[in-house]
Every structure is written in C-alpha cells, then in structure tokens.
Length: 323
Image (tube, rainbow, N blue to C red):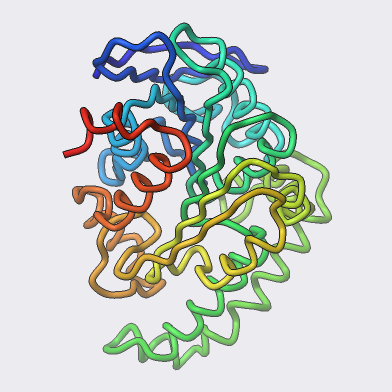
C-alpha cells in the first residue's frame, strides 16, 4: 500500500493520510475514519505513553481489502490547525464533512462507494454526517445509538460500583470518605455549571474544559439523526466496553431507514482489542495502554470483512487481498 500526506480544507486546514491499495483499478471504494474523543491524532496517538495505533490499524486493514482510506488529525491536534479546546461538536462534524468531500474528489475514488467509519465519539459524528451527506455505508464502532450524556452517566454508575468493591488501602480510603456517594452530585454540579456557561472554555481545578463541546453534545440527540440515515449501517461494540453501552445496539434497526446489522463481540473493549477481563474505572487507562500494542480483535476483523464484502466489494477482487 502507498500512503500520502494530504491537507483537507475545512474552516481550518486539517492534516491527514491518504492510503491507497497497491493494485491497478480505475475506481476503488473508499473509507473515511473518524476518531473518538480526546487529543487523538490520525493514528490514535495521544502521547508517547498512550498510543492506541487503532486508526492506523483500521486504515491498513481496510486498504488491504482494496479500499482507499483517509484518516486525519483532529482540529488542534497533531499537524492540524485550530484550537482543540475551542472546537465544538459541530466543528467536528463540519471537519468530517470536509474530509469525506475531499475523499470523494480524489482520483481513483468511486464517489458513490464511500463509507464512513466512526469510533467512539466518531460514531456520533459519523451519524450526524450521514444525516447531511450522501454515503454508501456507515460503520459505528464502540459508540452507536447512545448520547454522550447517557454514556457519561453509565460510566459514573460503574465507577461508583467499582469504588464500593475496591480492595486494599485504596478501597478502604474510598469507603471511609464515601467517595462513591459524591460522584453523582459532583458530576451534576459540574454539568450545571458547564451548561449555564456561555464561553467556549472554562477553568475547572486549574484545567481547561471545552465547555462549548460539552454543551453541544448534551443538546444533541443522535437518535434523531439515525432516523435520517438511509444507507446500510453496521454497529459493533465489545461486551467488555465500559465506555459505550453494547445493550443499546438492539435499538438500531428501529431508528435507521436502511439495512442495519449489529454485533456484540465477546472479550473486546473500547479500544477494539482483545480484553480478557472487564476493566474497572480505576484501571481502565492502564488497561488501554497495555492493549495498545495488540492487533485489532480478530472477531472484529471478521465481521468487518464479511460486511464490506457483502455490501461493497466484488468477491473476485477480494480474493487477491484476503488470505
């Protein structure tokens, strides 16, 4: 495969990577990869310690199947211009639309066969994008059919349970000060402060918070945009994912207009890698770092391969790329 550095013109210039399969074909299907929450670059790297490699792995996987793929640094991240802390949800949707339109205009891309893949928050962004931009398919990984507000509430509930069952000295301290009882009231107070603000950013405990992004997310109902989606949709979440709720996937077909499929993968967490045990909220960051060196979950690869083969790729063409 061949990889080229590109610049996508949105309201700011976004830096990205266009990856092309090493084969001769006049027009190929293409995939845009939309990243999740946080300062993730086009590959899934936050810093030297936390480097998921997830989006680069997805790009390589799809390119080996014969797709042209595009992934990009988010606004204010990596080589992209802009201010990360003043970038709202709708700025991210605008950037994804600029990226998919850029992809459609590339030589060698079949503009009628462009698929969007969103991970985590990228699933919400991808859904909003599908409601406004024609596409051939939508793949939602670790984040479908769920609002941010719902995901955060579920995470807090899990954290409270984890605190009550924590062992050792840490568990003793958490129970002594009844920290589990304080999680929800503190979260509600914080959210009311954010929702009542009008500035793009706020300072909370000496940290800069993107208040604009949170206000826009809390006002956004992803299910309303799912009802506008008419292209085929595939949703996959891991059974061990504590950041996205796999149970809500069963509601997918009741919202979208077109064909839809969903799968819950056993022993897969939020980073789409193999996970032998479900993380606790107190260990989730450590676990994600440990999983970063792993390949994509093999069952995930199988499901993605089967779906794109059925929906978009000629079996004869696929045989060259799939062992």
